[in-house]
Length: 151
Image 1 (cartoon, rainbow, N blue to C red):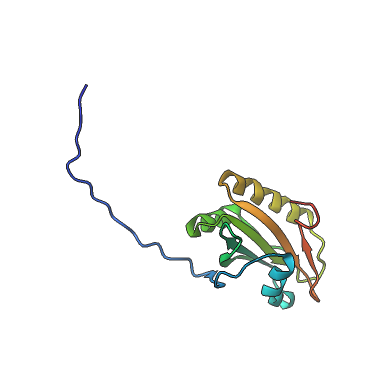
Image 2: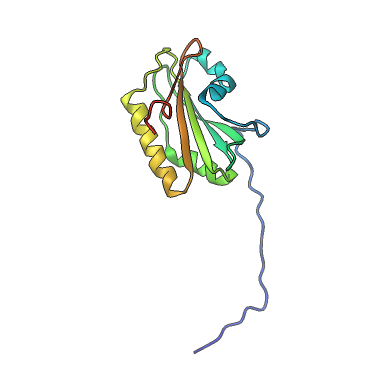
Protein backbone atom coordinates (compact mmCIF):
# COMPACT_ATOMS: atom_id res chain seq x y z
CA UNK A 1 0.00 0.00 0.00
CA UNK A 2 1.35 3.41 -1.00
CA UNK A 3 0.79 6.52 1.01
CA UNK A 4 0.65 9.83 -0.77
CA UNK A 5 1.21 13.11 1.03
CA UNK A 6 0.21 16.51 -0.18
CA UNK A 7 2.78 19.11 0.67
CA UNK A 8 0.88 22.19 -0.44
CA UNK A 9 -2.72 22.96 -1.30
CA UNK A 10 -3.69 25.96 -3.35
CA UNK A 11 -7.20 27.36 -3.06
CA UNK A 12 -8.52 29.84 -5.56
CA UNK A 13 -11.63 31.86 -4.80
CA UNK A 14 -13.65 33.10 -7.71
CA UNK A 15 -16.09 35.94 -7.14
CA UNK A 16 -19.48 35.06 -8.59
CA UNK A 17 -21.39 37.97 -10.03
CA UNK A 18 -25.03 38.14 -9.07
CA UNK A 19 -27.17 37.96 -12.22
CA UNK A 20 -28.37 41.39 -13.35
CA UNK A 21 -32.03 40.31 -13.22
CA UNK A 22 -31.90 39.87 -9.42
CA UNK A 23 -33.39 42.62 -7.30
CA UNK A 24 -33.13 43.08 -3.55
CA UNK A 25 -36.16 43.82 -1.37
CA UNK A 26 -34.28 44.54 1.87
CA UNK A 27 -35.31 41.39 3.73
CA UNK A 28 -39.01 42.10 3.47
CA UNK A 29 -41.11 39.43 5.17
CA UNK A 30 -43.58 37.60 2.96
CA UNK A 31 -46.54 36.41 4.95
CA UNK A 32 -49.53 36.17 2.64
CA UNK A 33 -50.37 36.12 -1.07
CA UNK A 34 -51.77 39.62 -0.53
CA UNK A 35 -48.30 40.78 0.49
CA UNK A 36 -46.87 39.37 -2.74
CA UNK A 37 -49.64 40.90 -4.86
CA UNK A 38 -48.98 44.29 -3.25
CA UNK A 39 -45.25 44.06 -4.01
CA UNK A 40 -45.89 43.14 -7.65
CA UNK A 41 -49.05 45.18 -8.32
CA UNK A 42 -47.40 46.73 -11.39
CA UNK A 43 -47.82 43.38 -13.17
CA UNK A 44 -51.53 44.20 -13.55
CA UNK A 45 -50.74 46.67 -16.32
CA UNK A 46 -48.13 44.61 -18.19
CA UNK A 47 -48.93 43.65 -21.78
CA UNK A 48 -46.67 40.58 -21.71
CA UNK A 49 -46.62 37.64 -19.34
CA UNK A 50 -43.76 37.90 -16.86
CA UNK A 51 -42.64 35.08 -14.61
CA UNK A 52 -40.98 36.22 -11.39
CA UNK A 53 -39.49 34.27 -8.51
CA UNK A 54 -39.11 35.47 -4.94
CA UNK A 55 -36.18 33.76 -3.24
CA UNK A 56 -36.63 33.40 0.54
CA UNK A 57 -34.49 32.41 3.49
CA UNK A 58 -35.60 29.99 6.24
CA UNK A 59 -37.63 32.69 8.00
CA UNK A 60 -39.46 33.64 4.77
CA UNK A 61 -37.58 36.90 4.47
CA UNK A 62 -36.93 37.88 0.88
CA UNK A 63 -33.34 37.47 -0.21
CA UNK A 64 -34.06 38.79 -3.70
CA UNK A 65 -36.33 38.33 -6.66
CA UNK A 66 -35.74 37.73 -10.34
CA UNK A 67 -37.74 38.34 -13.46
CA UNK A 68 -36.92 34.90 -14.79
CA UNK A 69 -38.89 34.86 -18.03
CA UNK A 70 -40.78 37.29 -20.24
CA UNK A 71 -43.28 35.96 -22.74
CA UNK A 72 -46.02 37.11 -25.06
CA UNK A 73 -49.55 38.34 -24.48
CA UNK A 74 -50.80 34.91 -23.42
CA UNK A 75 -47.85 32.62 -22.78
CA UNK A 76 -44.39 32.38 -21.26
CA UNK A 77 -41.82 29.60 -21.58
CA UNK A 78 -40.56 28.66 -18.11
CA UNK A 79 -37.58 26.47 -17.23
CA UNK A 80 -37.25 25.11 -13.67
CA UNK A 81 -33.50 24.85 -14.24
CA UNK A 82 -32.99 28.64 -14.22
CA UNK A 83 -35.18 29.05 -11.14
CA UNK A 84 -33.17 26.42 -9.25
CA UNK A 85 -29.82 27.80 -10.43
CA UNK A 86 -30.58 31.16 -8.87
CA UNK A 87 -32.06 29.56 -5.72
CA UNK A 88 -28.80 27.69 -5.16
CA UNK A 89 -26.72 30.76 -5.97
CA UNK A 90 -28.46 32.92 -3.36
CA UNK A 91 -28.93 30.14 -0.79
CA UNK A 92 -32.73 30.18 -0.82
CA UNK A 93 -34.68 27.81 1.43
CA UNK A 94 -37.98 28.51 -0.28
CA UNK A 95 -39.43 30.31 -3.25
CA UNK A 96 -42.68 31.86 -4.38
CA UNK A 97 -43.38 32.12 -8.09
CA UNK A 98 -45.53 34.86 -9.54
CA UNK A 99 -46.77 35.55 -13.02
CA UNK A 100 -49.37 37.77 -14.56
CA UNK A 101 -52.18 37.08 -16.97
CA UNK A 102 -52.48 40.21 -19.16
CA UNK A 103 -56.01 39.08 -20.12
CA UNK A 104 -57.05 39.61 -16.50
CA UNK A 105 -58.36 36.03 -16.19
CA UNK A 106 -56.81 34.64 -13.01
CA UNK A 107 -57.85 31.00 -13.48
CA UNK A 108 -54.77 28.80 -13.94
CA UNK A 109 -54.40 27.10 -17.31
CA UNK A 110 -53.36 23.48 -17.74
CA UNK A 111 -49.87 24.78 -18.59
CA UNK A 112 -49.81 26.82 -15.35
CA UNK A 113 -50.68 23.71 -13.35
CA UNK A 114 -48.17 21.55 -15.22
CA UNK A 115 -45.22 23.93 -14.80
CA UNK A 116 -46.03 24.41 -11.11
CA UNK A 117 -45.92 20.65 -10.58
CA UNK A 118 -42.67 20.40 -12.54
CA UNK A 119 -41.04 23.24 -10.56
CA UNK A 120 -42.17 21.74 -7.24
CA UNK A 121 -40.76 18.29 -8.10
CA UNK A 122 -37.43 19.77 -9.19
CA UNK A 123 -37.18 21.93 -6.07
CA UNK A 124 -37.93 18.97 -3.81
CA UNK A 125 -34.76 17.29 -5.08
CA UNK A 126 -32.79 20.29 -3.79
CA UNK A 127 -34.68 20.56 -0.46
CA UNK A 128 -36.14 23.91 -1.48
CA UNK A 129 -39.81 24.54 -0.76
CA UNK A 130 -42.29 26.01 -3.24
CA UNK A 131 -44.56 28.03 -0.96
CA UNK A 132 -46.93 29.35 -3.61
CA UNK A 133 -47.49 30.16 -7.25
CA UNK A 134 -49.53 33.32 -7.62
CA UNK A 135 -51.27 34.52 -10.77
CA UNK A 136 -51.91 38.26 -10.87
CA UNK A 137 -54.82 39.53 -12.95
CA UNK A 138 -56.51 42.93 -13.09
CA UNK A 139 -58.06 45.05 -10.31
CA UNK A 140 -56.05 43.39 -7.50
CA UNK A 141 -57.48 39.98 -8.38
CA UNK A 142 -55.15 37.05 -7.96
CA UNK A 143 -55.09 33.27 -7.74
CA UNK A 144 -52.98 31.50 -5.10
CA UNK A 145 -52.14 27.85 -5.79
CA UNK A 146 -51.52 27.39 -2.06
CA UNK A 147 -54.84 28.89 -0.97
CA UNK A 148 -56.68 26.77 -3.54
CA UNK A 149 -55.06 23.49 -2.46
CA UNK A 150 -52.95 23.00 -5.60
CA UNK A 151 -49.62 22.85 -3.74
